[in-house]
Length: 87
Image 1 (cartoon, rainbow, N blue to C red):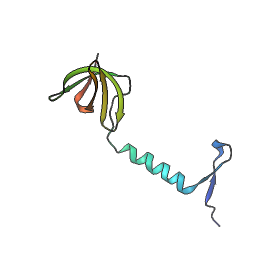
Image 2: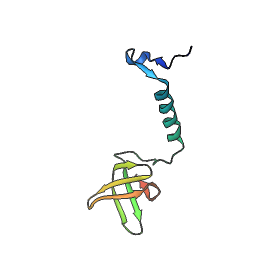
Image 3: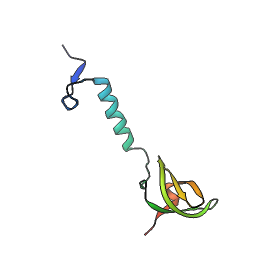
Image 4: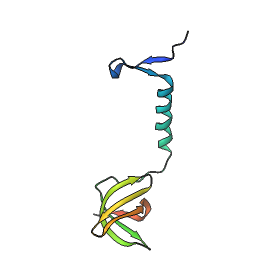
């Protein structure tokens, strides 16, 4: 007979269902193939967009390929392809 619960030794003996383990593995594997920004929060960048102009600032928000850059004029959202790191 097959058990539906696997003992998780790292969490002090709380039982973990096989479906939650499979869901966690699937979401981790799916995340590998999704596009992500190469920048991290706190990186100093220059955003160059023909509509918003060229602005220097710090990355304060990341979601997928979008990055929120905090500048002296406020927060502007750029695609990661429009950003360059400051040297």
